[in-house]
Image (cartoon, rainbow, N blue to C red; front, side, top):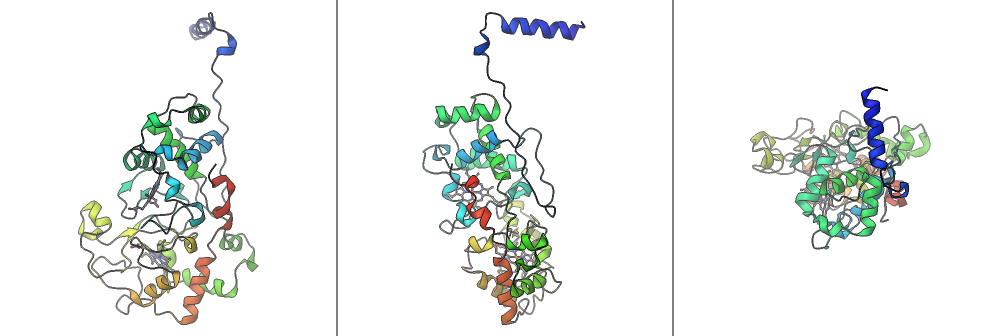
Length: 330
Ligand code: HEC
Ligand code: HEC
């Protein structure tokens, strides 16, 4: 036997010395959870130090809905991020939904937070919530931390990592648009189909920013909402004038359920949003070159085109996501 072998044997003997086998801690082997994705989705990045597991997701989901996460027990993530509204709410201004955030690297409307999903969740737990781990030291949660991470040690990092794992399961992929992409040609009505054609056309330009199967490029744009953009949006974070008036492109998945719209909730309905893209566009220095016909106020859509494009946006609603019991309060 080589030296390593002897050392291992010695460690075994030492470990077992005077110790009943039944007292040994249970082996920590959480069960990997494979988040299934359709072929047209980008691959999901999962960091090696936080693999998605059934136990980790269960803990993350528990914490997401648990008011003990806030120091005074007053609120949980799910108080502002409600499943039936695609994890946003009409009741609190500007709430961004939690949809497919596994692919995001810029967070918040002005991108004030840039980094991985894990880092974003650490920020939410430590800075936004100011979680007091003492509050979490209760038997039910300790048991779940043990199952997820192998010991009852509770840290804000572990809490954040578990919530990140839960976020990776918040995948919306079951809209009628997805059925259409998966070869069910009857999934879209004629009007929705025409709306889709406009969405993906060089006239509509929507798909450049609301890009890929995620319907966002995760970048920042000034779409022409205001004439005076000085010091607003991304510019307020970076201090660069060229970033003034730029906001994160929101995903359009489940957009029917996330009213009101835009970073400041200025539009109550999708019809109002489309009227804006049609004739409400206002010039400012940083307006995006992808916004069509700025001098003419926008796309100048016909009445039928407006109906079509709104119909297409509603075809991005994912009833499975909005009612999946695996994502609801445990
Ligand atoms: C009081 C309401 C409220 C609570 C509670 C809340 N949020 Fe939010 N959340 C918001 C608002 C408002 C925004 C958008 C803020 C902005 O962009 O400036 C947001 C945005 C986010 C975003 C950015 C999404 C994106 O697309 O960039 C993440 C991630 C997030 N919240 C996670 C959480 C987590 C995790 C919790 C629990 C620890 C939580 N939130 C609790 C209101 C809330
Ligand atoms: C230049 C990039 C760009 C283009 C082109 C674009 N959008 Fe947007 N869209 C954005 C950004 C950025 C926002 C958020 C702006 C804000 O709040 O200040 C947004 C917001 C929206 C919203 C509101 C979503 C919400 O949750 O608040 C809808 C709906 C929308 N766009 C649909 C469309 C449609 C339909 C088209 C094509 C006619 C289109 N967009 C073209 C970047 C773009």
